[in-house]
Image (tube, rainbow, N blue to C red; front, side, top):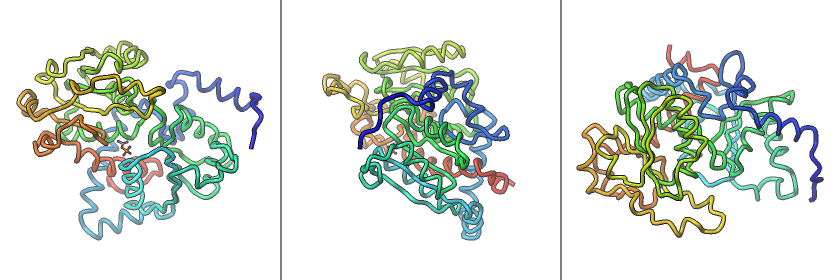
Length: 354
Ligand code: CP
């Protein structure tokens, strides 16, 4: 079904809003001084991060016993959530789903637009608005950059707004991945997040996880970043500009071995070829950006090896057996961090933290 291409006043207002700096937009996605829609990693400050990490720790401790699990499951049993994941996902989807269930949230899901009325010509915006007729929270993954933000903006203009959580939007942001990555650092370093050197490795140009994690690191003191990538996939200028503005030192190199000895965390990523326009990834030799068992002797005893997963060949499976490989713990941390976030959004975190 054809829709008119003419720009409406809503489109014009959105375009105007979208152009603003994120710092100007944040109040629009907050309620009573609290985060309401979770769209950007820049929404997390140090105080909120610490609060969420403590909630996640308390929740995982509490739910070790049945009575604790029953209590957690009663906290948000009045809430219904929609998981709209129209881009492939295993762990973000499952961790949100199970985090919701831990808190007693009942869930519905759409994972493919071919099963929604979008095939009849309904716009994605109307589709998401429809969810808000039935649920109290929408968690979304969408391939179009900015779409999750747009729907939150639209929703906040309706008479039945519901919070929206970004589970990954295009190649721009994956804020809850950054949240769980920071939570993994927090647990790995016993709560000491300052004074860390972090190497981010791989396809930094199109990796939304490294973009969001970089934004988050501004909350900590004396952080330095080493970006390690093929020439073709260097970190984007907007992120480098952000780091300069916040006085966070960084280096860029194509030599992984050169940064290994100094790193407190090595954050590996895969090539993001789902964003290819013409198969350009195939022309890039990615093998210098693999973490191999021989590299284990080059990193510090206290260094952690991270990966948002899924992986292809970036980390040899034998590396998994090294205690410094924390990526399997990292994905499980996602469930607790996301549960803490949902508890916070609905004001139930104080019932977990006491
Ligand atoms: N890290 C991450 O977003 O994984 P999925 O694509 O499996 O959700």
